[in-house]
Image (cartoon, rainbow, N blue to C red; front, side, top):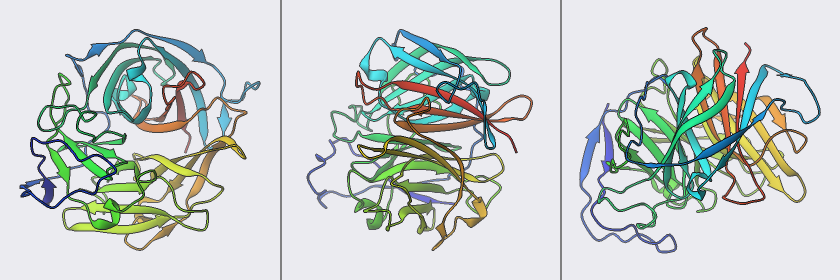
Length: 356
């Protein structure tokens, strides 16, 4: 299947508050989008990136003051609080679990890649991090996305044709080669998107991105979800982006939760992570599961709640979600928080097993 991609020229993006002009020709490129297993091995990532000294503190219990580990169909395996020597590793907003959970690649909301090895038990409990590296995302001209006003990167999806990264402020999806061996790899181009996506509010644009399972009707497509809506009376906008164009669906918004990330589970269902934060609610986390077969044009999805947590649990501004399988076949979720590079917030890495 063929996709249209807008190739990026060697010129800066326009600043976010300006509307893009129509001058200049757009070079069309084509590529095949194939689903890729999340177990892709990545022995060397961001080899030329900056090494970051990082300490971790273990999180043994999820509910504060309780030894409980079972939360519905989820079992809490453990977690880590990350304390890094540099602020560039803060703001983690999108994540891909690699090599059976032994490594991850993340993207920050200020245009940086972050990778680390996860020291873990065979069951998936995280014990610590090592080999933490960071590198800036580069445009096709080799300039950083920050310099080109193309950052505010929020989500990652890994496919057979490369990495796809959403940029919320620009409501764009960038394509990068895979693997990011050195960290100096340049953007290949942008996915051609319809006006309905380009016109999303800049502070509530594309926040979640997932690659359709290869053995489903969504094979060869990306599923993207907008962060928020005007109110609980308005649905979250969802988009099925494929070679033949883009189709829309919706997800019921409720209890003031906003979408932050999404991933397809091994069985084909979509898992959506949501966050709530306000003076009224303080902080909240929710995971909702949707049957993959229900994601189609015109659908309005409710989903089933797998987990809901508030300030009585070890959570923060949860924004990044990854999934992998263990050698025993267990499905493991990795949830990571965005600390907004603030001294008042934490970067957390939490692991759960889905018990079917």
